[in-house]
Image (cartoon, rainbow, N blue to C red; front, side, top):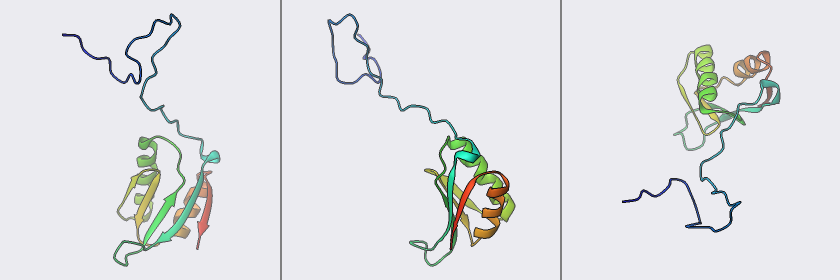
Length: 113
């Protein structure tokens, strides 16, 4: 029994000697330098039962770096939160505190009031 090759799409067999299979794997995202990041810090209350959260969007990089930055921000503010899909959510209104911290860390930050 022959195993089917993984992540090959659209071609069963080719007689072209220069043919290369196209992989279906997503490219690895590298984390941009803090100076190249454009982060937005804003207050969000939508679909959260009236609770306020500080929402940091615009992070470009790996999930590990996002989680690391999220952990530093949660420790700074002393609150809980989460990080996924390029967004960091902190429980409560900490726009000014988070904005100052990110600017000290050389991130381009825009605080939306």
